[in-house]
Image (cartoon, rainbow, N blue to C red; front, side, top):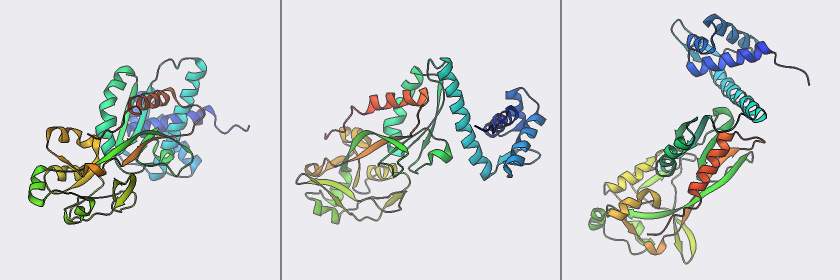
Length: 309
C-alpha cells in the first residue's frame, strides 16, 4: 500500500484538531507543548495540501470555516479510532474512557436517558458524555456522534438499530378543562374538543393520534387551535395549564396521573405505542466506551414496558 501520510502530516492533523477543539492556536500550543508558530505552520501545511482554508484568522481569534468543520469531524473520528486500536492491541483498554457523543429526542432525553447518566458516570468516571437534546435528525459521519436515539427505524442501512422500548401513548387533560369542556365518552368526541397539536420536525406535518379499537391500532387526525413545533414537551405544558386535550407518552405524565393533575381519557382505547430505537454506525471494532454504554442503556431500559395505569 502506498504511503499517504508521513509523521509530519499526522502531527499536523493532531495540532489542527487541538486548535479546533480549543478555538485557539495558543491554547493548542500549550496543550501540545509546542509554540503557537508551530501550530500555525501545521495548519498552513494542511491548508496547502487540501487547497482550502480551514480557519478564518483575526488578530483576536480563529474561527473554523465550513470546510474546516467537516475536516475536523472526520479527523477527530480517525484519531479516536487510532487511539482505540492502540489500546486494544496493547491490552491497555481495561476500562472505558474518552468522549461519548449522544443525540436524543427531547422527551426521551428528559424522562429516560438523562436520569440514568449519573449512575453511568459513577461506574465509568473516565467516560465523558456530550448530549445533544433535540428532535432533529443528526448525521453520524458529518457531526461526529457515537449514538443516537430516535422514534423510528433508520432508512440508512449502515446503522445498527436496537429497540429500547415500545412507549405507550395516553390521552390526558386536566380536571378543570374537562369540567369546562365536558368529558369524552368515545373517539368521536375528539372532534368537539381542543386537541393540542405537534408538528413533526422531520416533515413539518402534524402527528395523528393513535388508539386501539377492536384490537387494532387506528390513527385519527385531530384538530385544534394550539400547535407546538420542535419541543414535544410543549404540548404537555399546555395540557397541564388546562388548555386542551393531548396525546403523549405515558412515561411523561405518570406522576401527573398519580397525583391527579391530569386525568386519563378514553382508557378503553389505550394501548397504542411508538418505539424508541438506539442507533449507532456499523463498525468492526466499536470502542469500549460505546459498547459499554450500549450494554448499560439496553440493560436498564429494555426490560421496562409502559404500563396502563
